Amino acid sequence: MITTLSMLAGGIGVFLLGMVLMSDSLKAMAGESLRSGLAKLTGKPIKALLAGLGATAAVQSSTATTMATIGFVSAGLLSFQNAIGVIIGANIGSTSTGWIVALLGMKFSISSLAMPVIAVGAIMKLLGKDRMALAGLALAGFGLIFVGIDFLQQAMSGLAAKVDLTQYASTGIGPRLVLVGIGIVMTIILQASSAALATTLAALSTGTIDFSQAMSLVIGQNIGTTATALLAAAGGTASAKRTALVHLLFNLGSAVLAFFILQPLFSWGTQAWGLRHAGINTALALAAFHTAFSVLGAIVFLPQSALLARLATRLAPEHAPPGLRQLDDALLSVPALAIAAAEKTISLGLADTCHLLARRLQGEAIASNQSGVSLDKLLQSVDAYTTKLPTPQSAADQQRLMHLLLLLDQTRVLRDDLSGLHHADTIRHQPGLWDLAQRLPATLEHTAHWLAGDGVVVQEEVTEELRQITEWVHEHQQNARRSVVENAVNEHISPAAALDQLTAQRWLERLSKHITRIAETLGETRALFRE
Image (cartoon, rainbow, N blue to C red; front, side):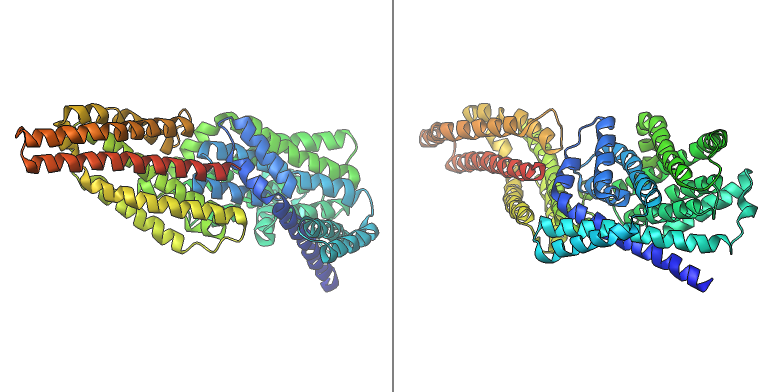
């Protein structure tokens, strides 16, 4: 018994090692394209689903896709609504592992062929560089997967004679629920639903368990795979918690559908087609069952994504201040996401500032320090967040950080400009300058919508409007200054009033220039995250 358990543990370990090597190598090879691809998703649920499916099939890890999705939502790169489609797609994509194991690991005895594959992979890793080295690790991992499966099959053959699971062979709800619970525990312990599934397929192929028991285990394993995401989101933002909750709600809903609808249908089908004995046919049937209940869940719940979003929002309410909800410490391990979170935070703060400036220039009575204090607190929070950011290693992340620091510096300058909000009253008493100033509020509101992420407004339009306003103010400043000086000389206004008006003119010109520079820098920064 000890030898059998040792072989079982070793088989699981070798399989997990192979999965980690292959998955991590594929993620590193696809890394930046995977990040940018998910970040570019539009509001179409089916497109988000296909992206999640493709990403998971490519890196062979639904956990990796789910964790990346949570990170993108926290950083503000991906909307919560789109994240639901990605999560559902990731669940379907994760079923590809079952087909690989059933078609190759069970149908062919390729453990002997796996050794040369591992050797070739190791040579590629030792002699190659960059992508070739990563491809070598992925190839070696692929070979180890099947070595692990071979160990699992041998262990399960010995276990079949020593473990009696006939007490759970009943088709009643009670024994099936016990097996679902065992499947959940298996995935939580192994921290990989693929390893739990491979173990189940090995047990099925050797007759240790029957097909009905295997289906119950797979249902439980699909629920258990949500544990990693829930743990990762526990200390994150409300958006991250909601994304993890949607993952749990979808998997639970799919499990209920599978338990009460698909499992009885597949049990009847295998009996009708004579697949009651262990072997390749039942292994393929189990892979088909795994895919079927993920697809069924997608068909039922994808159209209800808005309902899932409302439920998750109610279960995970937002407590962080509106302007600081993106700053999630869990993102610091991925510099690109942390930088994006800081950029999004600054953008939202600047959007509020533009709204306030527009209202003030239109004559609303607003305390001169209202926006300054808010922007100052936001800058302090972003400064504290960026000090915890690890040094970016990639050239792309270094360039993003450079643009973020430039944006922070320009935002500080704008914060200092806000102390001169009282100049708006002075400008109102200068007819020529007031006509110029009245063009700015509409552009500021337009800019605010763009900063807040309104997809209708594009950066090029905003920047061009700001440039035109800045040039117009600069061109008319000379005439406005001359008019003020002449009024003072002709004693139409006092020298003190003239100085106030000249100061207000400079403030308006400086304000328009600084906002234009910020829009240009922010446009360049966002372009980096779209690449």
